[in-house]
Length: 407
Image (cartoon, rainbow, N blue to C red; front, side, top):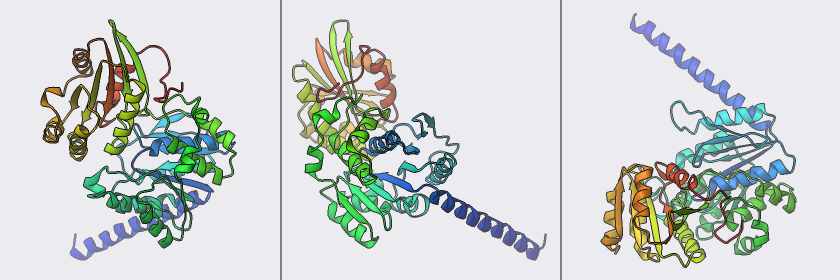
């Protein structure tokens, strides 16, 4: 083939690809217009929970609603509440949001609640400005996590999250510390900011939380209620839907076990990735179970999340001390070295690198005299979810409870 012919062929192929991309963009914009309410949920902690809460409230109100979460397990939630796994032949990619919008439009959804799956600031912007174009944006909070991508500082995390603020829409957030950054971004994008303050969180009563099958945070409920109120859904209707909501597999739950006379409570806090949230949950667990003779923290490390292991290792020695810290998963050396350097007594540290769930369970049981509080943290990915299921399958046959005591 001559050089001229090769260039002509390349030009034809390039033109065809550009044309196909333009057609796909037009079809996607048409699908978006068919869905009048589009809620895009982002934040450091609680994205999946808030996505599920808003979608459940919309369903309860009679609104045809589809939802998509990318938390512990990526799921597409149908208008009747049934869930389907997200098929990812080549792994996670933000472009899959286009496919989600297409499926929601095919279901004639009146609302789509979708969790932001991007980390890099430029991809967060792409996800919103091109793929979702939300009517309602939600940023749950901005805490120190994924600092290798969104950091290195807390304000940098907030600026990265602000990349997905919609243009000419509304933004709801429960973040207070970095609120000025969101205010500036909203002003730039001509978007109305609705900040959920401590008063709104306190207005979510113990009675409002009664009926949840798992531990749901007041902040998440308050944020979801603000969105649903703006959408015209009565508070009692919204709460009824939220209580019936199926929790994310990584939702905070606790399981009681009686293992040959050893009374154990296992609290699944693996999904709380950042140190601030994790310490809050650890303190909640200590408050509810003050009489346990042995207190154990299980840290699930991942070699592909070294920044998280380092953060937790640096912060954990400053918390109210457990009797033992058991490091599991992969890349445990980084956590252990950071924790000991920060003041953790090495005699309290147990390393179970690459051990199976049964081996981890036996090691933990061997540390217990008669009763124990066992708190899982670090990562729900890797061994976090399998170990949670291992404890759950050996627990008393009852539903998980709230850490504040509500069933």
